[in-house]
Image (cartoon, rainbow, N blue to C red):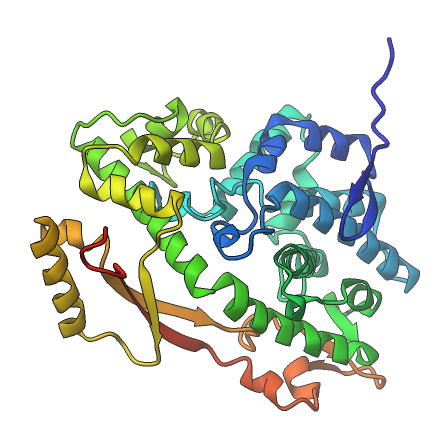
Amino acid sequence: MKQPNTLKIINDPIYGFITIPSTLLFNLIEHKYFQRLRRISQMGMSYLVYPGAHHTRFHHTLGAMHLMQKAVLVLRSKGVHITDEEAEALYIGILLHDIGHGPFSHAMERSIVSGIGHEDISLIFMEALNAQMSHKLTLAISIFKNEYSRKFLHQLISSQLDMDRLDYLRRDSFYTGVAEGTVNSERLISMLHVKDDKLVVEEKGIYSVEKFIVARRLMYWQVYLHKTGFVAENLLLRVLKRAKELTERGLLLKCSDALHYFLNNKINKENFNGEVLEIFAQLDDTDIISAMKFWSSNDDFVLSELSKMILNRELLKIKIKKKPVTAAAISEKTKQLITKHNLTNEEAAYFVFSGTMTNQAYDMEKDTINILTKKGRVVDVAKASDLLNIEALSKKVVKHYFCYPKKLGAI
């Protein structure tokens, strides 16, 4: 019987050729759980701002796995002992770190499921795959959960300078065309080392780390928190929230069976079992897009208008402010909307709302990026850098937003 060719080479627009290092990795990529990531947008609704931002979680995770292979090679070349089993576990961990994302990446976990994030769901997927693959993922799960004795391995998967961030910053910069987010991931990886079981960056790589932190800050303000994409994400959350609310009232909304299940049931961390996982694994962006096309002609004013806003890119106006929005300003816009369309306060709140957005490029309190000096000392990059604003970038910046219809008679 002819054996399948598992030594695949994938052509990636960022790195060129990516290799799949083992049969187990190939089988994971081929699995239906992982193939679903082809249909999950990496950047949510950002394509409404940046037309090229249609890349997927599938692209990103393969790229992160490629960078992890580079990191293992670099560390081994510097005398850091990493067994073949540990290396494969790292590749598995980074490959599957985002497998728990739902449609448009973050929309599900903040609307129609509660108390469970994509990290939790990723772990549930990993446990399920481990059971299916003769428990060959056990070490990867241990490293992913930071339960393995060699802590620097977990830092390669999840830290302030991990392979996840090194890929998504460069990839998102490429697909959006925002050059400010470009980072030299190869240079950063070539400067990695391990000291006292901690991932560190050699001192000569400090300027690359500085640029990485600055690039992350710029990408958040210019891309991830861009006001148009931000308001679109909020509208998507409200579409799903309204759909769940109407379903709970007994209305039957036209949508896929998988989406209907989550609209019709209260799903949380406690009851997210194997049966729920199988239904979740059927969900992707197309479920939401097709549902909104149906819902745009629904009799419910809120659901139909919110759906049309996203589909037609006729979004709410959003104002970004340094100070909180006053209750009087919200009340004034709400009253105008209620009068114009005969809505309840609850219904009007779907179109008039405020909140905060935060940006913290570097967190000095959490798993810092450490520089290894020529004298062998380990120093926080914010202290080692001669670029004074690195420490300033560790401060959390909070901005306030206010959303409402552009023309209060137009919706």
